Amino acid sequence: MATFELYRRSTIGMCLTETLDEMVQNGTLSPELAIQVLVQFDKSMAEALETQVKSKVSIKGHLHTYRFCDNVWTFMLQDALIKTNDCQENVGRVKIVACDSKLLTQ
Image 1: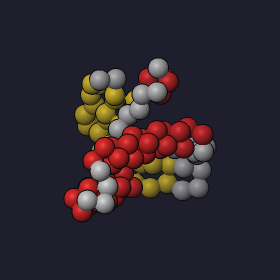
Image 2: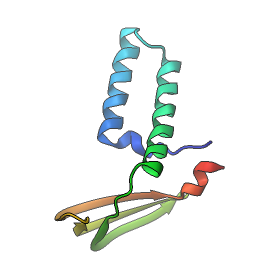
Image 3: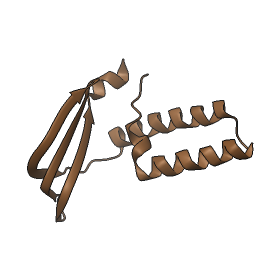
Image 4: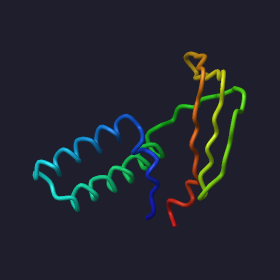
Protein backbone atom coordinates (compact mmCIF):
# COMPACT_ATOMS: atom_id res chain seq x y z
CA MET A 1 0.00 0.00 0.00
CA ALA A 2 1.44 3.34 -1.02
CA THR A 3 1.17 6.32 1.31
CA PHE A 4 1.74 10.01 1.04
CA GLU A 5 4.06 11.83 3.39
CA LEU A 6 1.67 14.79 3.75
CA TYR A 7 1.10 14.38 7.47
CA ARG A 8 4.80 14.62 8.34
CA ARG A 9 4.53 18.41 7.93
CA SER A 10 1.71 18.61 10.47
CA THR A 11 2.52 19.63 14.05
CA ILE A 12 2.42 16.06 15.33
CA GLY A 13 4.44 14.81 12.35
CA MET A 14 7.15 17.45 12.87
CA CYS A 15 7.35 16.60 16.60
CA LEU A 16 7.66 12.91 15.78
CA THR A 17 10.38 13.59 13.23
CA GLU A 18 12.33 15.79 15.66
CA THR A 19 12.08 13.17 18.40
CA LEU A 20 13.19 10.38 16.08
CA ASP A 21 16.14 12.52 14.90
CA GLU A 22 17.22 13.08 18.52
CA MET A 23 16.94 9.37 19.25
CA VAL A 24 19.04 8.51 16.19
CA GLN A 25 21.67 11.09 17.16
CA ASN A 26 21.80 9.73 20.74
CA GLY A 27 22.18 6.19 19.46
CA THR A 28 18.91 5.10 21.07
CA LEU A 29 17.35 4.22 17.73
CA SER A 30 18.76 3.02 14.43
CA PRO A 31 18.08 5.15 11.31
CA GLU A 32 16.33 2.19 9.70
CA LEU A 33 13.90 1.83 12.59
CA ALA A 34 13.23 5.59 12.56
CA ILE A 35 12.26 5.35 8.89
CA GLN A 36 9.94 2.42 9.66
CA VAL A 37 8.27 4.49 12.38
CA LEU A 38 7.67 7.36 9.92
CA VAL A 39 6.23 5.01 7.30
CA GLN A 40 3.88 3.54 9.91
CA PHE A 41 2.92 7.07 10.98
CA ASP A 42 1.97 7.89 7.37
CA LYS A 43 -0.19 4.76 7.12
CA SER A 44 -1.82 5.29 10.50
CA MET A 45 -2.70 8.93 9.82
CA ALA A 46 -4.27 8.09 6.45
CA GLU A 47 -6.29 5.24 7.98
CA ALA A 48 -7.42 7.30 11.00
CA LEU A 49 -8.56 10.21 8.85
CA GLU A 50 -10.45 7.85 6.55
CA THR A 51 -12.21 5.82 9.24
CA GLN A 52 -12.57 8.06 12.30
CA VAL A 53 -13.15 11.63 11.08
CA LYS A 54 -16.76 12.36 10.17
CA SER A 55 -16.76 16.19 10.30
CA LYS A 56 -17.45 18.33 7.26
CA VAL A 57 -15.90 21.72 6.64
CA SER A 58 -16.77 24.49 4.20
CA ILE A 59 -13.96 26.80 3.06
CA LYS A 60 -14.51 29.95 1.03
CA GLY A 61 -11.87 32.47 0.08
CA HIS A 62 -9.96 34.17 -2.70
CA LEU A 63 -7.85 31.71 -4.66
CA HIS A 64 -4.32 33.12 -4.72
CA THR A 65 -2.44 30.24 -6.37
CA TYR A 66 -2.97 26.60 -7.24
CA ARG A 67 -0.84 23.83 -8.68
CA PHE A 68 -1.09 20.17 -9.58
CA CYS A 69 2.12 18.17 -9.34
CA ASP A 70 2.66 14.43 -8.86
CA ASN A 71 -1.08 13.82 -8.38
CA VAL A 72 -1.22 16.34 -5.53
CA TRP A 73 -3.27 19.54 -5.65
CA THR A 74 -2.11 22.57 -3.64
CA PHE A 75 -4.40 25.56 -3.18
CA MET A 76 -3.45 28.84 -1.48
CA LEU A 77 -6.44 30.90 -0.31
CA GLN A 78 -6.50 34.41 1.11
CA ASP A 79 -9.16 35.97 3.34
CA ALA A 80 -10.78 32.59 3.88
CA LEU A 81 -13.87 31.74 5.89
CA ILE A 82 -13.84 28.26 7.42
CA LYS A 83 -17.21 26.91 8.58
CA THR A 84 -18.03 23.78 10.57
CA ASN A 85 -21.36 22.73 12.05
CA ASP A 86 -20.49 24.50 15.31
CA CYS A 87 -18.58 27.62 14.37
CA GLN A 88 -16.91 29.71 11.70
CA GLU A 89 -13.54 31.44 11.61
CA ASN A 90 -12.00 34.08 9.34
CA VAL A 91 -8.42 33.24 8.43
CA GLY A 92 -5.91 35.37 6.55
CA ARG A 93 -4.23 32.58 4.59
CA VAL A 94 -5.00 28.89 4.11
CA LYS A 95 -2.98 26.22 2.35
CA ILE A 96 -4.90 23.15 1.23
CA VAL A 97 -3.02 20.07 0.06
CA ALA A 98 -5.19 17.34 -1.47
CA CYS A 99 -4.36 14.01 -3.04
CA ASP A 100 -6.38 11.26 -4.66
CA SER A 101 -7.15 8.64 -1.98
CA LYS A 102 -7.47 5.99 -4.70
CA LEU A 103 -3.71 6.21 -5.16
CA LEU A 104 -3.23 4.98 -1.60
CA THR A 105 -4.87 1.62 -2.31
CA GLN A 106 -2.90 0.71 -5.41
